[in-house]
Amino acid sequence: MRKTVTIVVIVGTMIVGGLLARTQDTEGQEHSAPVGQTASALSSELAALLSEEMLAIEEGLGELMTAIAAGNWPRVAETSENMERSYILAQRLTAEQFEELGRILPPRFKALDSAFHGSAGKLAQAARERDAELAVFHSYKLMEACVECHATYANTRFPGFGGEQTRHQHH
Image 1 (spheres, rainbow, N blue to C red):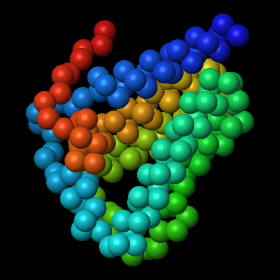
Image 2: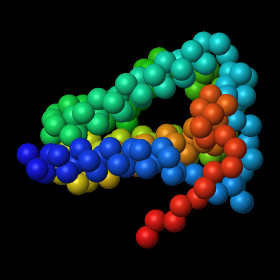
Image 3: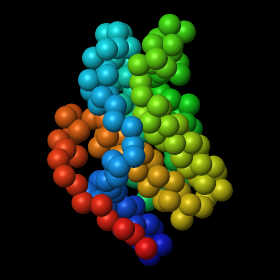
Image 4: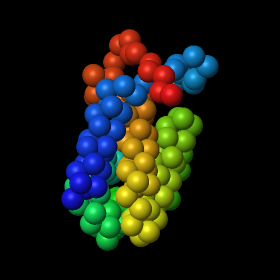
């Protein structure tokens, strides 16, 4: 029981810390239009699919936190595998829409998306191994990718990331 409480505290701290403290050093980084602006260049069908995907990810992240804290490894593995494969986009994207995404979305966005899906796969593996410490770490990496992407590309949708941010050095 104490181990479960410790994991819950660690996960909660990591999420809050990640949301509040994670920032991006913009020196030397690409300066692309926010995805919010880029998304307006997407077809309405593709924008709707992308929005649906983000809602599924949001729901999945909530499920993951509860399942990890409860040690529900089958649920963690299933949810993580769904995230790794994508919920909506991988299932319903046409070849034309795939090309459209590739053409419009900035390279850094694609890299963050790739990191997110890679972390989801690693989290699924940690769940299959019932490795709570590794599961917590990879859930943090999922959140980190979300926060960095939102801070970089969606700070009009998420105004808490707008303006001057403090960069914290963790040792």
